Length: 349
Image 1: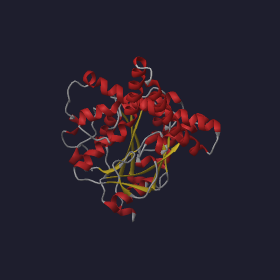
Image 2: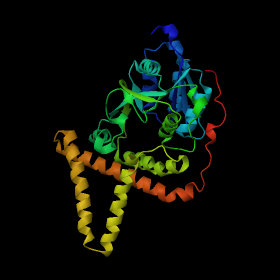
Image 3: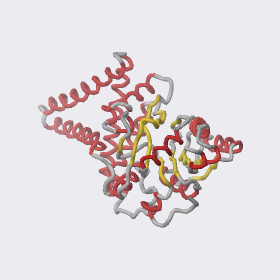
């Protein structure tokens, strides 16, 4: 494809307190093989306090393609909307600052979008450990396996195909004039909800193995618990606020946790039920143990750590969803309208 035919791309990077990852993420984008003059990088910072802003500021002094914008609401959907409104490109390419990108990432995204005429395109995630520790490697194994994340297509691998969602995403900018901006009511699941809107409007989402993203996972069990709990927490909220967007697999951990609570409670009043509870737990542990051994090539210590990673991942996610279900009336007594979708998108395409 001739350079004269290539569109301008606005890369939007929401971030908050990413001092350990921000510089590497930015550098891998700016070092892409896409024409320099056709890239702008908008870093939308959620008022970081760990030195992230200073790093971005120093990099912006040496590269005029970088712009640092404030995100007072400190959440991803508002960051994306700020970036989209301030962007100048024909294409919007969202990135995550916990990631790094291949040198052909931008060009591959644009090529796929143009060839397929899809409304959103992306690639498969390569999950990497967030630190050089056994625990981080165990968490990586758990969060990149089918037992850990279900049939989440983009976290596994596969051919070029239509998908329900892709990580981050590459869009033609005028798409947001048609379907609206990101839903700022959603602290989590905003990508899933946006992609659901795209599909409901008759749009297509395509994922390709030619596009790969290196994603650095949480490095500690406490970090995994917080991330998974919050992801699970927002599943019932998302259904309540938007009326859909999620699949049954998102709620399987919640059903598992409900089963644990129910059987435990019944066992208190009906002692024989403890054998059912024991069997319930053993079935899970045997399944988790099988996949732990499978993914660690019989390394005993790592197998145990992966097993524990599965337990933390599933319990925290399921418990989060259960908490979300219970607290819906308190947090969202009514379904407020998504005002983010009102009005045309500002800026110049």
